[in-house]
Length: 157
Image 1 (cartoon, rainbow, N blue to C red):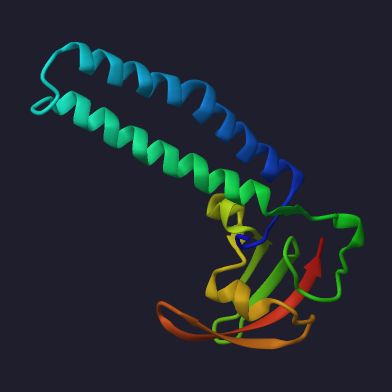
Image 2 (image 1 turned 30 degrees about the vertical axis):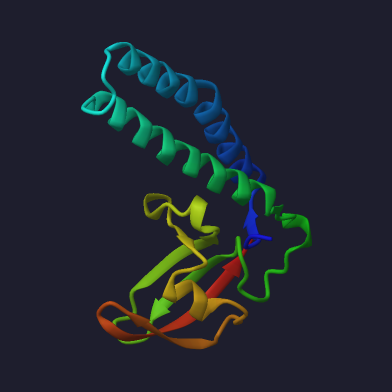
């Protein structure tokens, strides 16, 4: 049994679409490349054949990992979420205690993280520090620059 990953419906659909593309498009393309390289003769010194076989192995590994991720995915029901504690899919506004800078992030699964959209993975040090906390709590987090303290200003869904 793989690690359970909590995803939004949108995130799961994106993963399923990616998997479908790998199976329907990428896999046949690599098979075609292998067949073309095989037609060129001696396989012992055929760099195209070696490269295509390696690409095939990597693709099959990606497909397998994605299938495991999807199989162990659980959809998050936002209607059952509470806004009084930080959890996955919470939108959290935090304030850096030292310089009063405010940031708002949505905590998401690793596969849905996107810093441009202010979505950070629950696997990040900041998110791990915030999980289970309430508005008003101050959390100490180890970040690349050292220790930082963040006060939770708001939690929403």
